[in-house]
Length: 426
Image (tube, rainbow, N blue to C red; front, side):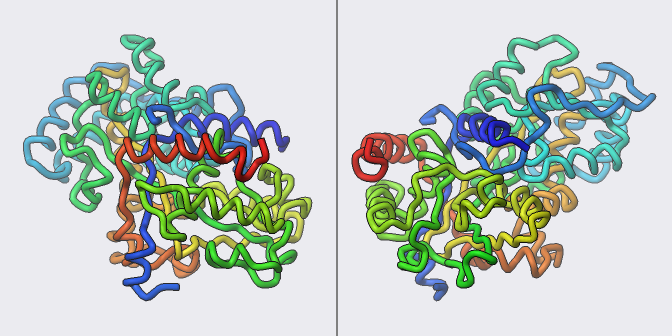
């Protein structure tokens, strides 16, 4: 896999992130445990290559029935919405039958390696015998909304989207989304769903530290640890925070670990300025290739970007251990919505239903993402001990909060202004 492909995934998702999430040091201490409207995410991502630039297609089953089931989908949605809660068992059965008759679902901007969409797509097709087409796998949230509007009335219009909060709001305001409350609606935290049922945030990522244990015998566990002299020349960010969303998120997380807040990202900039001045921070971009070659030993990135390099490193006889620093927990989420009047409206809704089901949520976990229904999965015993070991404890996760768009915009502007002179030397 070429570094260029890895970087192309990063460019796609740099424009795919809107609002960010964080857990403050105050609540961490209490627990006793050591867009702007443009999107942002992974920058020059360390995730392995997705499905290139072409569409990814699974062959349609013979039961395809076109758009004749649109009315059935609308009736199902109306019943769920009028109940005030999630889809009832009877309505879910009706939706499943209608979606199966459609026989296919049009999706967009879902790289295989991103949050384990490869398994979610495959398992969805296996369970429901519904084919999928993923257009423009490396597209941005802007690309997704553009496709919904420009392809309206056409057979290739997306039936569902996976977009940043900023673009989810745009989609809602433009009347593009259909009201849909999945059966697990009541187990999704209020902050991760639209009160009107226009979208749900099925998952989010946490900023993590990945360490090649063959190179570093004492892996860092906190932001404070990364300052230690033993890590000199070993720490790498996933890009430049003026361009890379994952690097920007790391700055915000470090700010929270050092007395900052949603309104004050300055401590994060100062933290990385110190890492740079003491020689711990390398002036290079993260890639799976640089990890596997031993050029990078400690990587800071989204947790859902770690599984790909982990598998690649195994082939090189190395181990990548990932932790979420408990002194500054920071996350970013994505919103899933069904498109109003799309070619396969029932299949679009059923796809959203699948992503917040137990099976879909566990697939997210296995891909390094945290599902919105994490608390419910934990209670049901569906989270493995191995996965728990990589995450903050349940109480910390439950207290993750999200800043306003205005706070995000202000922090972004501050980083853009100060990173060059204080850290990058340009």
